[in-house]
Image (cartoon, rainbow, N blue to C red; front, side, top):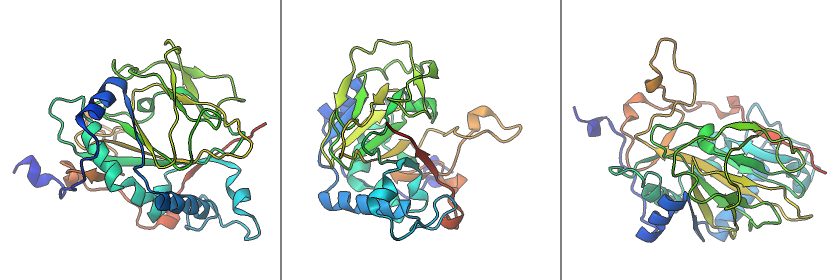
Length: 305
């Protein structure tokens, strides 16, 4: 029996970017693609995060809030919600967005000589980042979500215009090339950064650039790319983004502890789903909750001055 006979059905996605854009991503570790998400889709995401925050999708983490609270009051205390696609079919739909997944199928493993364009998703994160709320200090996503082939990639969907004042992403172009994970320490600056995060250090920060992007644009960035965001310094501007994480289907995902006695090289979390191409490990099955009301989300709340 061949590998293909074990694989999932093929998911066909459109080709969206050109060879120059693919080469830019491989060289610099990030790529901005404007207008991938339509205004109507952005409005759908804005309304859905309110529903999630109000407890509109039954789950163990978020209880329904009083109807008298305004939408502003409901979301203004939340920095981020992790894994909203576990409970929201709208959020899950956007993890499979055809044009976004089309780009992913072209760039996620473009640094690999024989990569096939197969991509799977393992995480969603909705950052609300109200006015005054902190950013995230220098970090590399691969430090938290390890892959086998350096194919981890984030798709950062700008729901609002993201600019320097409201806390857009800053990157160090090319910092992913070595495939090196920098040491981390406590950042010691809770006024600027979320206290949840450690800070990567030991590199020259001076080449950093802001990645300002209009609503509807998507920033794709490699898991080894050093990036950060600063505090939202506006008084009225939210910086809402949906960040979904993906990797090559050929890469195992050692995100959880191995079973006792099992080899480390075989560790592979299966709470994933393919979004482009085929999954050659489909024979392992997938771990998805049968009852989303039994699901726990992770909410990050922060104080601000």
